[in-house]
Length: 188
Image (cartoon, rainbow, N blue to C red; front, side, top):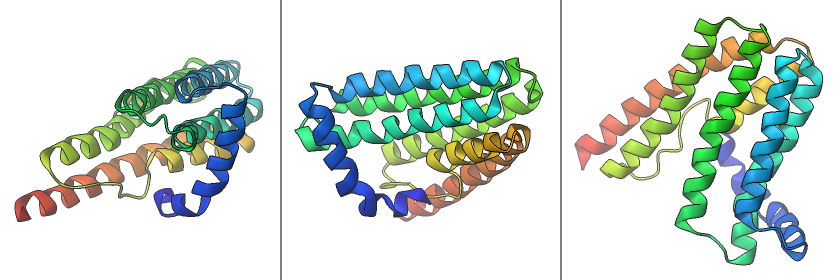
């Protein structure tokens, strides 16, 4: 759903990307910096500092949104950069949920179902696109939405509710993608 607003924020993000480029920061460095910040958020979740964790998570997510803008602004878009970004996103998702679970904020079984649901959202898109479905950026809970839900819930010390919501919406999104992939792939 957030993918629909990407065109509106593309230019402002690329302006910020140009500023970062003037500082000598590369897109891949920004990806790693964002991941390290997300690890810090995960640690704060482990310590049960939900509000601080949420704020740190928002910073990490913002940097994650900037790495692609930086790549486009500097002409450094690369297949490896896309791969690295996507791979680091999966590690970030896992670290956030593990921090929450290790902190005792959510049961492990719920964390596991949430993580698998989140991974299936990403995997189903990747696999469908490789099979020829075309871009499959559909569903009610892509990664951006899932991060925003955790962020907002943490600001209210209600990350447990956020994780439950992410779990449900991730599985719904996965089903939406499977359904859409089936339609597209059977037509082609």
